[in-house]
Length: 287
Image 1 (cartoon, rainbow, N blue to C red):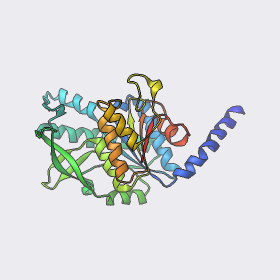
Image 2: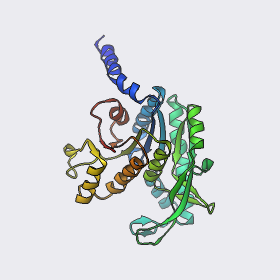
Image 3: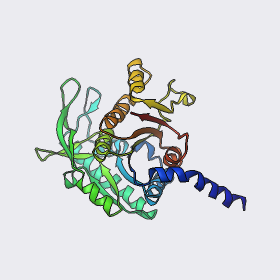
Image 4: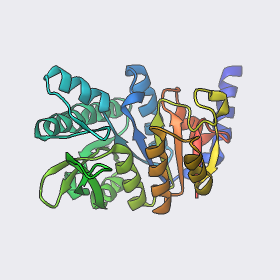
């Protein structure tokens, strides 16, 4: 009898958070680094299906860098890099679209349906959702078919929301030149969150969050303001690959998103712990 009572207590403790976030749009950026196996994949998507059932409006934006690298290697397509960024030439772009919009996107949709949810797989090209323009490297060098989002057409997302579907979005965009562009998934998630005025934007990563001391999980910073985050970037506490992720958070907040979160998506049920408990499990950045 004790175990059922404990389960009931957990539900009661979550009730204030369920009430608070019911009806709220939550954008979840699901990075390839967190898809570490079938069990972890199902655990994360189970959280998202539960969020939908308790009245939240989750939208998934996914990456897929590891899968793209593996497919390029298998096809013996050599990648070129400029200023540390991959050049997306025409053969590479075909592989990127095949992996993101074909393999990964449909895998996520399939698992959501197996868990009792309803999902629709999209790329940013569908419904002209993500309008892009060609972007260059920081030194002005050509990156090929790499795009920066200049507009989000949210009509298709609003239609899916009315019909209670979970959108699963591959970060591909269409340029005014009618060419397909590869878009950074973090930036796509931030742009979509801003267009929908989401209450939360959550980045699932393979690190605990923002740390005061690198490689020391005990130094996790649980909450930051925009000003504090900018100071940590300037001082070098936030460094390397965490800088563009935090900058995406700041851009989303500037566009009206309520809160942004960086959490460890390899922790089982990390999403539920972050949203439905008072302490959370990662770092939140607030306006």
